Amino acid sequence: MNYKMYDEMMEQPDSLRKTFESELSTMDKISDLISDVDKVYLIGCGSSISTCYSVRDAIRMSSTNINIEVYTGYEFYYNKKLTENENSIAIFTSQSGETADTLASLRRANEFGIHTVSISNEPDSSMIKESKTPIVTRCETETAILGTKTYITQLACLYQILFKASNYENKEELLNQLNDMPDTLEELLKSTEYDNKLYAQDFKNEDIFYCLGSGPNFGLAYKLAMTMFMEGAIKHACPEYSAEFRHGLIERAEKGVPIVFLTSDLESDEITQKAIDFCENLEVKSIIYKLNDYADVDKLLSPFILVIPLEWFIYYLAHLNGEDPGATRHIGKVRY
Image 1 (tube, rainbow, N blue to C red):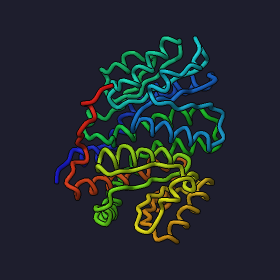
Image 2 (cartoon, rainbow, N blue to C red):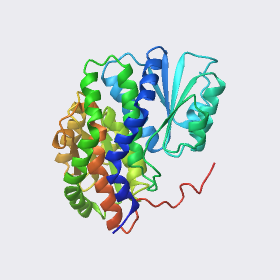
Image 3 (cartoon, helix red, strand yellow):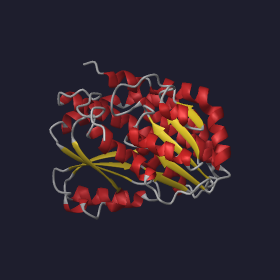
Image 4 (cartoon, rainbow, N blue to C red):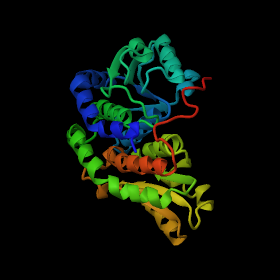
């Protein structure tokens, strides 16, 4: 068994180290700009928009002073609320820097005189060349479709920029823990593989998974469903906010149905626990990932921690079903 995803998972710690070494000064400049704007737009697609969801909800849960809106590329492009030279900044995230809808929205923002920032892994990409302030994640080329090292570096850049600009009371501790994240990831890559290989064996015959999270864990639940289960393991999947469990999914929760819960003892995880308790009474196949089982960090950093065991789960789930977790069938071939 030799898939490119394995190599790229193991490269996550060094990719993060190199990105911070190279780009931290640029990130600090963007943080200074954010301190003086009225609004921050975060734009991305796929794994990239999941990073936007996570940092937006982390910022909102920290009661800070930053006004954030998240859009997919074409949603931003067709947004009629944009105004000429508005006091805002738009941050665009894309692994390739050529994602058509994200690139179109960047060009629209430039037309409106909005300060544009791009976070991409390809230094010669259109998004890096056309944004006012580019950030290049130092991952080298990423091949596996579901995104590992580009996900973790994008997420880290967004957290660094936005929390540095925030008035979150614990921001210095959070930023110090973010700086130490490469070492934390190295340990998690070693310690979480075996248990999640067993999970994959237990669930290899399941065809659909529901993925729930609250706060910044919703962004990870979105990534888990959209780009990990569906693109990586070729399984049907659906993401939901934990608080939305009682609308829709509660009618599908029954004995034997697999539901993945991401929980970090956030205040809002009171609702996550209610969903877990309900499912246990029905003998649902609950798969529960708890932050405090893996690391002692600020709860708002939970996606950085929980993504590692989830990557192992998806890696082996794909393998046991005869799939390459980094291959694609249609992505990159279909343009519209």
